[in-house]
Picture 1 (cartoon, helix red, strand yellow):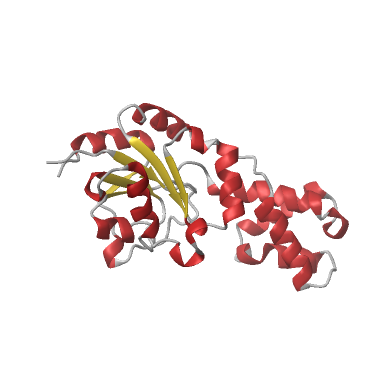
Picture 2 (cartoon, rainbow, N blue to C red):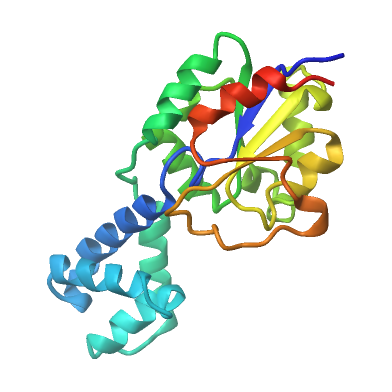
Length: 229
């Protein structure tokens, strides 16, 4: 029998609200590009409206069109760069702060997160994640081809922490990709259902169904106390 030794978390919509990062980026874009988009506060409000519309993936394109600007690739690229490179104003969920503090004396803790490297590094810095866990793996550092569901990041963090796959638990929010690799490697998988989660509606593939589901991280210690192999 082997008890749990390490708890690894996803970042976006698991430890903090991804929507808050998006809105932080919108503010940065509205301020940096006011010369073509207009008054920053009005631009920000319009971005938030578009976030909840079918044009969520084309927010910058719509803004340029509404501002009477050419929908040029150069302008879009500059806005995307501003978004991805900004230092976000974000904070950990309250339950994340509580659980990270309570688990650390008894477990090794880590983070595995997908996303463009500069953006993820800025999130980690803004949230001061590295002071709260033992290891952070940003999959883009390994290469875009190693984003989840590829197992490389999971294999890497096991080596870094000095634990076995069977003693690890992964907690994440995106059923479409998050649990394929940990399930295959023998980890326990825990899906957190955040009401505001951007990926909440994503279904799990047959090999990516999480073993457990929770609605708050405060439920996690009870699951950990029962996990043995």
